[in-house]
Length: 45
Image 1: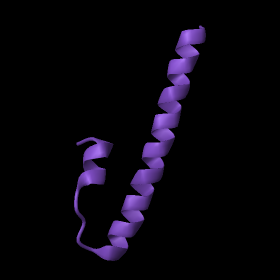
Image 2: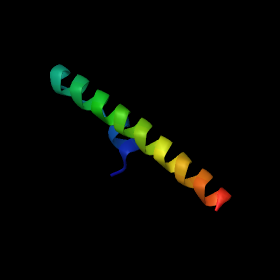
Image 3: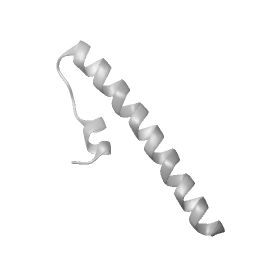
Image 4: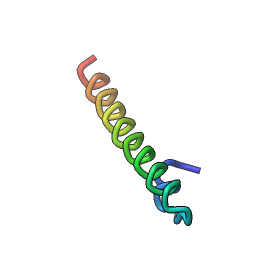
């Protein structure tokens, strides 16, 4: 299962949902930034 698929899933426990969704969102942002950095680094190398 991918991070994107997890973010699309429905969660039924509001407290867990809010915490998990926030954590997954922040992870997604950081992974995308890291991936973009790697692509830029590969182009300049």
